[in-house]
Length: 326
Image (cartoon, rainbow, N blue to C red; front, side, top):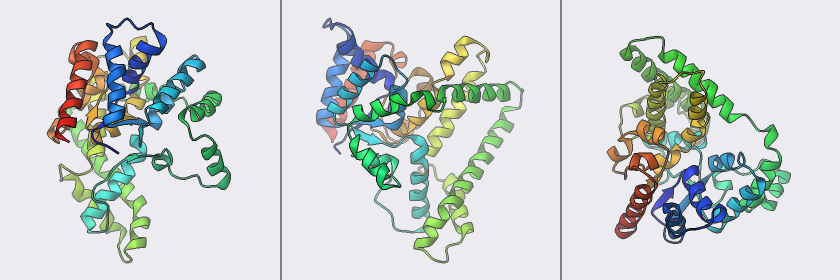
């Protein structure tokens, strides 16, 4: 794949598509310029697409527009990116190997040229045949769209989860207590995931104890450069949780604001590992300076930049800067 790696959120891609394929182009819309810029990114860099993008796409209507959008994305030949839930264990295993002095790749990468590279190979011959038959994105979309009534209610789950966060925040616990609990849960969560990875690691290094692996995961907590996606997710979740206190959890505005938050969090692989990352204003504020602290360009959002025209201009400038220095 060619640098720079550009991860655009679903809204950014949808705005560009809509400006050209849904509305009549006027020649003046910043999103028409965005559409052209995305084509340039595809030709000169690596445009990312993920299973999270796919999950969001099949929620849209009408189906004809969904398929047309999928055909446009397919024509851009995107690089596939693991959603955050799939990327976390791979990231942790890479850092555990580094801490334990085991063999590993030069760096951890959640990107793949192929769809199977981010979801894993099918476990059965029939599954493999089915996947090969639907190798184009539009074919995958048609298949998933036909079954969408039976898919998990991600938006409902997201709303319920953030209502619970709102209730926890409104109980008036001292901020330092909340931070201590979050830190303790982070260490415990890493330890639990490290235990799950231990059988894989001990198969390569006989005699490696489960305690060795857990201790290695604890050592990573004190290394600021380690497990960047894990850190970014914790930071973003904490920022979103703080934002909930300004909302009425039973309001329509709360549901509208947080029903897509789970999908937003799954996009964070792009924020941790992409050279360029776009998101909405809530995620932009929750991420804060975590990307720039790691030497990456700041994340971009339409509201954060002051409007669509400024957003497209900033995105173009970031891409031009990175292609010039590549």
